[in-house]
Image (cartoon, rainbow, N blue to C red; front, side, top):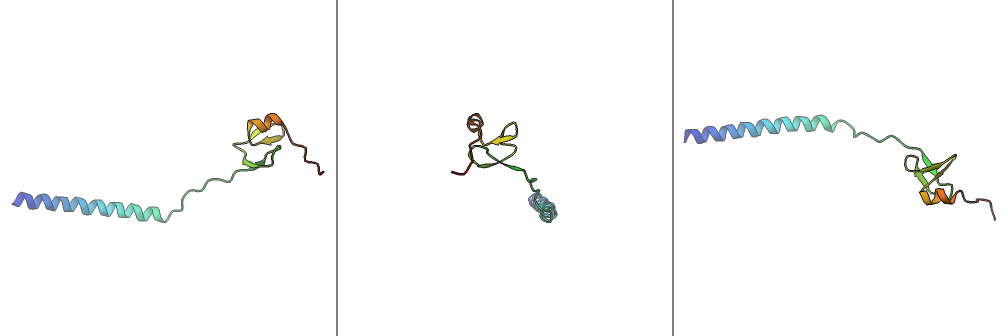
Length: 81
């Protein structure tokens, strides 16, 4: 009976210690804002006008395109009709 009480007392001590440590970590992280991604330059597709992030755009000289197919098609004539 004495060993059972010591075992239960040990389990309670471990549970209490773990809960205290996790609660302190949780409180410490709640005050910090989540890291934000840096803004990225958006480029307009020279063919269709869609805006895409520069890291995803296809570049051909001074023109940017949204896909390899539009890069192959080249810039669209944008003169008013």
